[in-house]
Length: 327
Image (cartoon, rainbow, N blue to C red):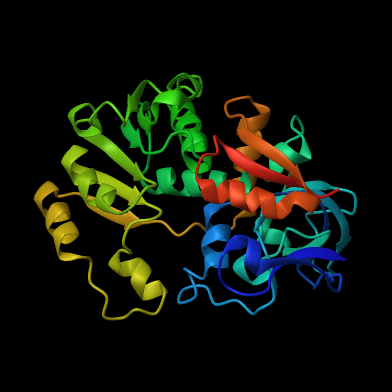
């Protein structure tokens, strides 16, 4: 089968190649999916550039990407929740990475039937961004009337998080650039902050939850806007101590400034490492079918132009998700 593979670490156009590789087979707990569409994410770019070698070691060559939608064509002996012919979607586990290919084998616990009211391309756009937003906001115990700041509202995770928070009855602040303000308002955000002309710290004050999708100084600044006893959840900031332990970093301590900011606000800081979860995808499926959330796609590329899709992702200018149509 054909697959887009990482052949070395480095610049995107130099590090990827289309290769003919063996078709995977479904192990006892797997389903084999004929890939109809795959989505790409910032993590895919980071892996190609070699930025995550210390955390996510992969063999070279490796097939790229994690998000998939398609059709079950084979299933393992122990799989009882899917049948051949089911239309499904998934964020595949790390050890099964490789959805920019004609087929992918995935453990059935990471798979859900796809929402019935959207296309394969739309379904492929959802898993990683949707699971990241859901798991982050649910860790923060989001509830009705919570005031939430979501950074980067026009990105893949941000655009899903706005809709998810609104579906939970929260009041949503979000940041974006001038050109995206009206577009982000349509997602349901209550107060859209133009980061080019406005200081979000003077507008979003005493919020219950900050969802940090930017990292760097934004992680620390979160404590300027979160209320006493609030929570900051981050998907790109420093690890918290429990997460570091999970990665085998026994002596890790939260950076001093961040630890002090937590203490001063009596607030919680949590790094969220998204994990594949078919039950959570089933929850998202229901929300999509109830039209509480809609997929947001920037552009769909044919499989032959997958490298162009990844360079588009690397530009950082996408509004919503970038999807590759495989078949």
